Image (cartoon, rainbow, N blue to C red; front, top):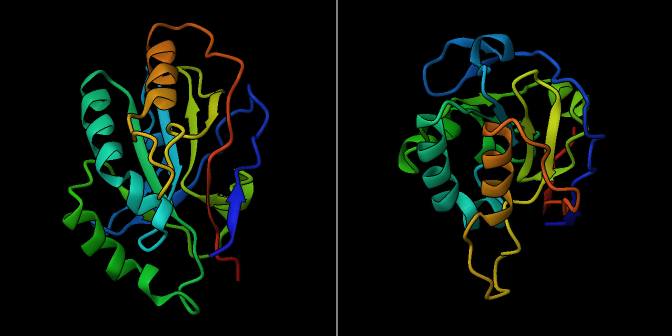
Length: 184
């Protein structure tokens, strides 16, 4: 595991469309089909990263709450499954069901989507506003495995609330930290 910060894609960057297979349903889904008129959270995660495992429960809780408010959540795994078979699509489906993911969990086999979003780590979060322009990128909160800070989702929740209110998200956005994406 290599601790890696997110690259902090420029705010205002338009969301890039993609079409990827959902490991839960088996259907090909696109950003254009999944995005919401109120806001869309695109997340790069994986099955085995301790930083993702650390936030999974709170992430599901936040997604369940904010999906009811009209925010769309989309999870993507772009890891190399040849060298990291625990992140293979069949295992992604099992992981999603075990963790009660209320959102699609898409597989990016070419890693082109991760590259297009300049994703660097898992978890890496990108919140797009109603116009699908990047409003927030960064961490869920200040909690990491072993630092004894409560995993309360405060940064993500503040960003989600601002997007729902059609307000500018706070300027002091901190990068997410986690395992590097396992590039081919």
